[in-house]
Amino acid sequence: MKEYKVIVPKIGFKNRTQNFEDILNQHAREGWVVNHIGQGWSSVVFERNKNR
Image 1 (cartoon, rainbow, N blue to C red):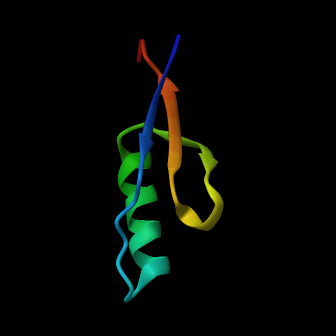
Image 2 (cartoon, rainbow, N blue to C red):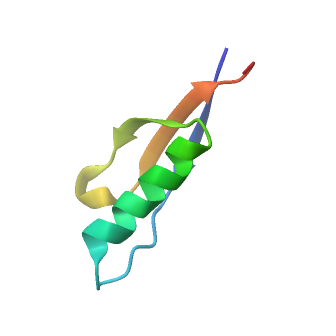
Image 3 (cartoon, rainbow, N blue to C red):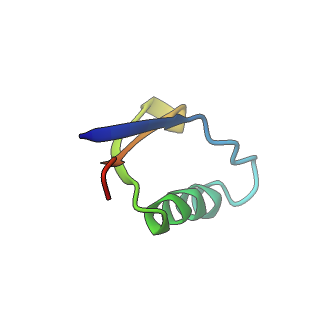
């Protein structure tokens, strides 16, 4: 079974790309995989196996 998590990244105006990358890497360390990225990085949907 899968579980999903939706976030609205708050990345600011300076270093937008680096801040977005940091958010993705932090979730990856927790076992999340990107499922979808909304247009203009408006939202990110992550998924992972619930029974890990």
